[in-house]
Amino acid sequence: MIAGCMNHKTGLEGKPLPQFNVVLMDSVTNFNTKDIPQGNPVVLYLFSPYCPYCKAQTKELIENISSLKGIHFYMFSSFPYSDVKQYYMDSHLNKYANITVALDTALFYKNYIKATGMPYFAIYDKNKHLKQTWLGRVSIGKIRDIALE
Image 1 (cartoon, rainbow, N blue to C red):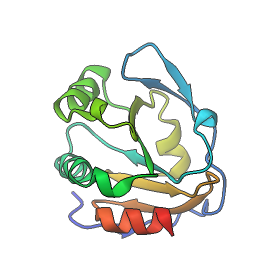
Image 2 (image 1 turned 120 degrees about the vertical axis):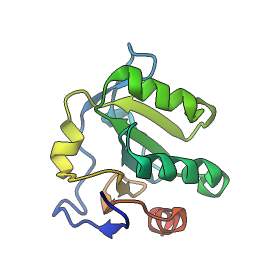
Image 3 (image 1 turned 60 degrees about the horizontal axis):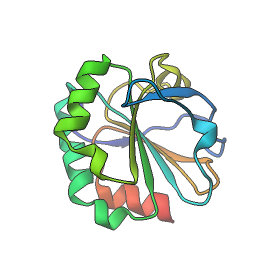
């Protein structure tokens, strides 16, 4: 279990966000990351619907969503659709225009970034180039500062 957070060096810093497909929460719409618009920072948040740290991180994200304007969060999970959908519904994530939840059924991004645990954050700049990654819970202020610097 991860109790703290740490900057996780990947060797991919400065590289563009890779293109890969995910399935949105309606269970039929495929979305490719190439369609993420440039112009605002992007945070990819890998989560597990079973992880207490992910639940706490999501709660903190929602509680501070008004301070995160201009940052779009893409929450990806590879766990069973029914469990991710329940997490999505229980957390009321459909209410937030700057949060998109999807299934990465191929585990593409987790393998690409070599995430060793969750929650895992990858913060991309407005041009979709990787700035930093974090493993474990991280403060919303830290996410905001890195994304908007």
